[in-house]
Image (cartoon, rainbow, N blue to C red; front, side, top):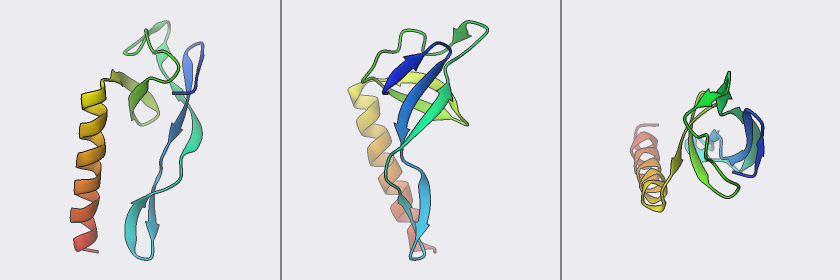
Length: 86
């Protein structure tokens, strides 16, 4: 996470892309996402340099180092599985 801007965060996220017939994670893109609605959200204590999970442009939670590693590992695992059928 790069910056807190009131009810929104500025994050660097990797989009899912199709390249040469395979699914890949693209280069990080700076994106504005929602962290609160009417002053309430799931990541109210987020700080710059925290890693967060996102769902449809909404911040779900701040990730621990272990959660971050698990997301990276399982994302790569499932991309590999998906690409076997493409």
